[in-house]
Every structure is written in C-alpha cells, then in structure tokens.
Length: 417
Image 1: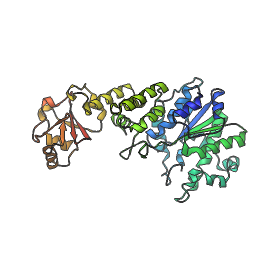
Image 2 (image 1 turned 90 degrees about the vertical axis):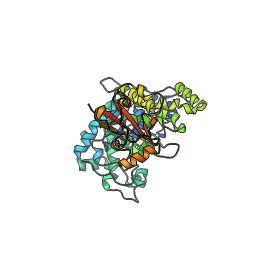
Image 3 (image 1 turned 120 degrees about the horizontal axis):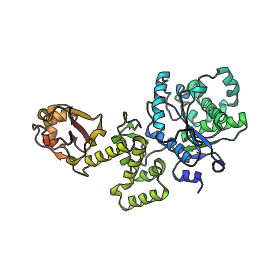
Image 4 (image 1 turned 120 degrees about the vertical axis):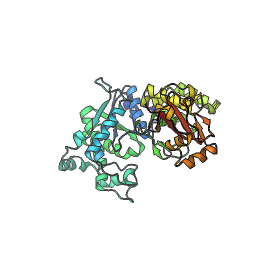
C-alpha cells in the first residue's frame, strides 16, 4: 500500500492532484497547511489538517504549519456565509502565540531534516508593495476563473468584498513564496480550500515552471448530519481554559457508533490491525464502548497530556458510577474546574438546599427544595430526600462533594482552604 493509499484509508483524501502518489514516493517532500488565527484557540475541527501534517511527518516528509498573521488580517471567505469581522493586529498576535503552543502537541519542531517548521506569513505579506503585487502576481489570475471557484460562488448572492475576494491571491502567493524559499511542493487543507490551493499550484507553474501539488481532506460531518466539532451547539476547543479536559474527553467518548471507527482512523495513530480489532469489539459488544474509550483516551492524551487524561478518566468513572465516588483519589474532580462552587469548613457547610442553589442547579431555595422532594437531586451519586440537612463530614470525598440534578447536570462543591 502506498502512503497516499494509507491516507485514503484513513479518510484524509477528498481530492488530490494527479501524480501526487508518485511525487510523495520519489523522496522526502515539504508540505504546508495554513491556519488563520481568527480565534484564540484551535478547535477539534482543525484536527483533520493537523493530523494530516503529522501523518506526513511520520512518513518522512517535512510539514510546515503556516500561521496566518497576514492572511488573518484579510479573512478567508471559504465556508462562510458572511464576511468575518476584521481583527486587530494585537488580537491576531495573541491568537498566534496561543495556537503555536497547541501545534507543538502534534508536530516535532527542530533543526533536523524532516522536523516541522512554524512560520508566519505576516513576515512576507505585510511588507508587499501593492503595485508590485498586482503587476507580478495579479496578472496571472483571471477574474472569470476566480468567479467560478466554489469559495466565491457560494458568497456572491450574500455579498463578497474585494478584501475577501483577494484572499485567493494571497494564499497562492504563500505557496509560491514557500516553494521558492524552502522547496515546498504540497499544500494540504480541507475540501473547501481546493480552489485556493489549486490556484497556488497554477501560479507556481506559471511563474516558476515548477511542479506543485494539492491534497484536500473531506469536511467532516457526523453520521446524524450534525456539524463535527460542536457539542450542544458549542465549539470544542483545544485550549483547556475554553473547553475543560473533562468536557473534551466526554465529547469523544460520546461518539456515535457509526462515527467511531472513521474517527479512530483519522484522529489517532493506531494501526490498521488495532482499529480492526476495536471495530470487531464494537460489532460484538457495542454497549461496552471500547472503541469510544480508545478514541477518547488517545485524543485527550495527545491534546492535554498523560496527567490530564488520568484525571478525566477517573472523574468519568466516578460520574458514571463505575466505582464508588467515596473511594475516588484526591484531585480526581479538579478536571471540572470552572464548575466548582466553594463552601466553608465542614462545620459551616451549607444545607442541601443551599448547596443546590449555590451550585447553580436551581435558581431559588424553593426550586431546589421541590427538586429534592421530587427525587431529582443526587449527592455523590445517591438520591437525596432531606432538603434541610447539612452536608456532614462523610459527604466530603477528599474535600469534594458531587451534586447532580437529573441525568446530566453536574456541579462540584469543594471545601474552601
């Protein structure tokens, strides 16, 4: 099996230029993918191209993560129904720094031959002379051809500014610049980038007479038709300050049976044999969710590290009743940071009603009391019925007390130190 065939099996190939397989097989190549810092963090939707770069590096090629400090000031119209709000240069710089740190979780950076490069296109785009750019680059682009590109077509009715219309030229120039400076001959991205990437391939051929290639991965949707990367309408971020490691882990653990095998192929480095074994277990005993657990553990460890994985796995086991929460190790609930309400010392601990209100599980004492009386409140996974009782010393597990309302709403109390 060729390397491109393996990428196709893993779900990375939506479209590619002819002879790409031969090009990759002929020797180590340099490939890049662009990431515009329009948000303070990467999200799980960015993992597909990041993992594609990582697969290229593991096969002996050199990846470039190109941060769009320049193109991010313009905005890419691809996949957007309306024009993005322009960010300040200060916001772009802050986002760049945070995303750089996240990239290092997936790619090996350094001085060796196939070590990844982290570049910022602001270094060459911001200094461009407009007149020179239009003379040397713009003349190679036909407006008629640009209007046929999908990224432009889908926006013509809603409106497309000249600022965003010019994005294709800047992205193509990035490819040309990297071809000249570091011998980059492959650009990868999502399928919505096909028009922009092939425009760069054509520019390299016209200006340098060189050979360059494009590879785009499919845009992922779930088997249910929902947009990948969202949980209850909210984005799942790689930054633990925006999405807690626990919630991140649960996102992957809750993967539909129909999606889990494709996700294992794309978002982990497991071998074909390992994935086929997990697929067999899924078919034989779907309720065990071994494939989902392998997926959640693999991606969480990659993004957040071994220690965070241990904490979220223990917390998940407690929350879903896989072992007695009273025996949970110290610190197991720290992964729920941001959902923690502090209480005083045990002797001054709140009543159950007060705890439910303080934790945000009810808006008033009356609402909390009704929820308790109706059997909807659980303390450390045990149903409670006495609204007025105080939380005693035996209710605190290593300094924590876990509250639950119904099936899904959790909150954590911790003793104030």
